[in-house]
Image (cartoon, rainbow, N blue to C red; front, side, top):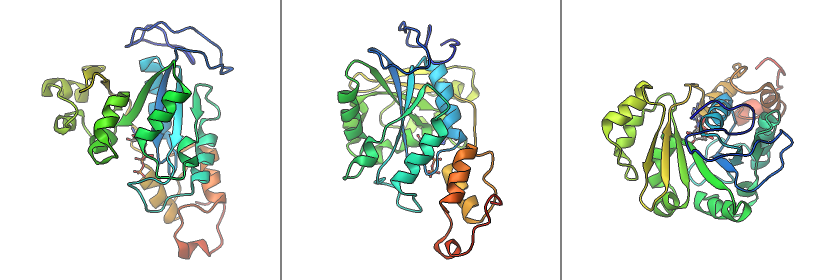
Amino acid sequence: MTRNTGCRGEETLYNAPVVHHGSDIVHRKGMKLGIFGGTFNPIHFGHLRVAEEVREAAGLDRIIFIPSGTPPLKTENIAAARQRLAMTQLAIKKNPCFEMLDIECRRRQKSYTTKTLERLRELYPDDRLFFMLGIDAFLDIPNWHRPDVLVRQTDFLVLSRPGFRFIDLSSSPYLSIPRPLLRKLDARTLRYHTALLAGGRTATLLPVSPVAISATDIRSRAAQRKSIKYLLPAGVESYIISENLYVSAKKRHRTIERGCR
Ligand code: ATP
């Protein structure tokens, strides 16, 4: 891994040479794409900061944010897909390396990651895809749709997240990494570790700066009319207020005091 400037990779943990390009987003063949799926309900600085750090550390050319459609596992207090797409768009618009795809939201059926990865393979046949997710989400994979297929479909970037430790991954059925190595990642004395998954794909475990923000906490603050400032981009905060999101049905009837939430 090494420093890279702007929207391009140099010598990276994958050691593949990357052609430099400007910020005018021309999609060329052979790019390294970080795929960042999530409910993004709402998108926040935790997502954005880790995406930026991973892009830099792994020398990714682009990060593609994919808000989920109807999440199969989450049903409570979910903003409409169009609203989560709008918030994601607002959040990423100033970063030329960040893109968004609405493929999951457009799908009528439930949004399963295996289907998304099949579609991405069609969309980007010449690019290398890295599916990015936090330790919490990686641990949850056994509960996803067709997990054994999923772990054979893509390479993974597994990112640290406050409240979860790499050592917790010792219980994952998909990884067998010596515990001392996991402890080193938790202690940040090891910058990353790449492990082989069954089927030949890789999972790179990568500690990133801890940003203890969660969408659950933001929704709870919003519901209590507490401030959500500085937890997410200002444009997303304004959108949440103007669309009256995450306020309980009872409170939704009351007048919103704009700017005071
Ligand atoms: P919720 O609180 O509603 O469960 P969330 O904040 O976990 O939401 P998601 O949209 O579910 O956000 O997360 C998408 C991905 O981003 C997951 O892989 C998750 O692990 C990762 N992620 C979310 N917040 C952080 C954070 N603060 N640091 C690192 N990774 C994060």
